[in-house]
Image (cartoon, rainbow, N blue to C red; front, side, top):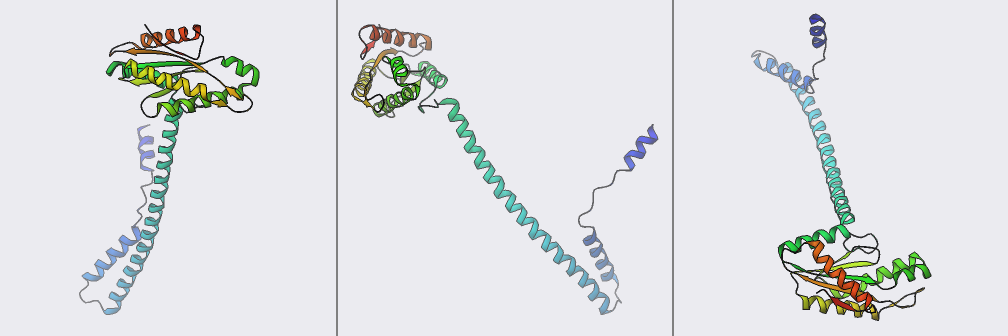
Length: 248
């Protein structure tokens, strides 16, 4: 068995020497150079062989450099595509596909972090009688209404707060470090913007939304902050909808 293993190991072919012929030509030139009494023809022959091998090396080097440049360009292009894909995947993982606002998981995470660091105002809103829209006009019209609602929110919120879709027709607006009065003012502006908006065909009418607001100091748990705003939203619904209520 040992002999068989040794025989197997010895049978492996060594790695090919890519410059074998050039090495041989160089060695031959050295031998010729060492011949102090060789005639000119011998030197010319040796020089000619060296020149021939040098030309071949130059051609191969240019070819390899060209391939390397192409490979580098292809790698750079692939890297750019991967970075673009990573950004797209990250966006899809954190944003609602229909509206482009933050999705439920992302807005919860952002709110949780804001509550830990600075406290936050939470505004929870729900589209009034949205089920009637879906039942009367169909889900495509309902999706268009949701997109229109988000357009109204974006015009009012700007860069001062974050918008998240937490349910089918329910949204959260987060104001990190905000104060109650700021939250009430923003909620009322959003309510008015939605109430004034006339939605297109086939709905062809105004639609309203109800709002609940909670102001939460640093260290408040997400469930507590959301629960307060959601309770205020419930009171807004019970009080007639299309209104803003604040948590106790």
